[in-house]
Image 1: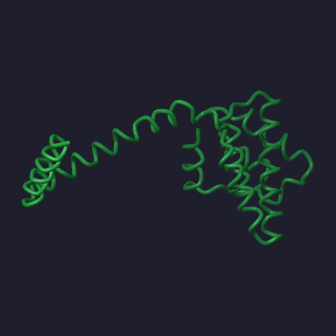
Image 2: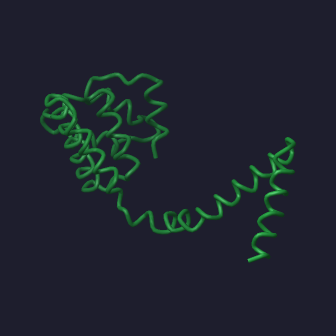
Length: 163
């Protein structure tokens, strides 16, 4: 019991001496931050190792909450866009196109083709633009030729960065 009181008194005096000047306070701050980090390290490791098992369920829950709180007409439009993007993914998978191409096609759709998804052969025509693209005629030129829309240089640059 006497040892605990003595150690407590020594620690208290040491903390008082350190808290008096700036460098002592900095040292105490560093020690405190390191202690908190070390205490949280097991949680960080577990989340890092097993976070992939979540399968992005949190994102789906958040998406459903957002859709439920939107006005009815906006929620319907967003659901329609999601359905179109899902269909684009399916058609691109069937045609053997890459995931990168799927994402670029979805960006192109959201940029300048919203409302055109009900046209005959829309999805196949969109996929064909990617299939026929080569060094002479890029995807954007095919999109312009097939759908009659012009994609700005700024949008082209952003879409090209998608992987």
